Amino acid sequence: MSMTGLSVQGSDPTSLDQGVVAAAEGALERLGQARDAIRSVIFGQDEVVTLALVTVLAGGHGLLVGVPGLAKTKLVDTMGTVLGLDARRVQFTPDLMPSDILGSEVLEESADHKRAFRFIKGPVFAQLLMADEINRASPRTQSALLQAMQEGFVSVAGERHDLPRPFHVLATQNPIEQEGTYPLPEAQLDRFLLQIDVNYPDRAAEKRMLLETTGSGESRPVAALDTDGLMAVQRLVRRLPVGESVVDAILDLVRSARPGDGAPEVADKLAWGPGPRASQALMLATRAKALIEGRLAPSIDDVVALAEPVLKHRIALTFAARAEGETVEAIVRRLTARLG
Image (cartoon, rainbow, N blue to C red):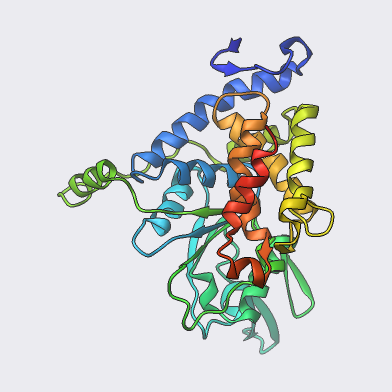
């Protein structure tokens, strides 16, 4: 059954809050326009675009992992335009200091020779921040950004400065250049809602890219949402109903990925596993994915589809498991197969 393009399968439409249905109908068209606008500029990365949108609609932060030249920076810039967000970019380097991101106080002297400190905001005071090559900065600088991501404010000289709303970070990480990098600690990786792997485009997409980006003209993104509209959709995501079977599937999956009391076939391979934040991430991400695809409630298929982006950066294997050639991706696939 459908309502103006919205699927309500798995739910009784008469029991749904009609306000949610009406809001979802209005959001569906705008989200379709947003996804099409991003895809008109970013070629051959449909899954990446969808996961990036899921991250923002769920109110979280994303970690984009991929080799150079796969349009990660362009994706963030395009999303800023399409979603109506103030977007900024910071190139992380080993000598980057926390104040280069958060801001600092400067001493100023007025016309009457009175001196006072004034806070100058750093680039973190944006609605969409791209942290480019985040693992190139020192742990101290990484921690400063990740604390701001978690708390939603920064403290400088004992004064609290609230970050704008909404506030999202899309960080990039290069998986092959490990020399001169500082890998993010597991506790800090947990701050990212999803880890999004950016792979090479297929041949057809790369051919289209060649033809459309090397000529005299180039596609430009257009705005499909504004800040208020985006925040309304984010509130709607949290109102979408989640069936008991989906909640149980999320709990079963996350709890099975923990050493000790997890699934017997993988428990001895895990050094540590995902905490409750992973369950929260899956709950929000499945709702956002369902809405993007025109459904009023998530399904177990959504849990399976999002299991790897949500869990892979929250699981660590033992040394023995790595020596045997085991991978986190294989572990997650094994666990999702248990959901049926």
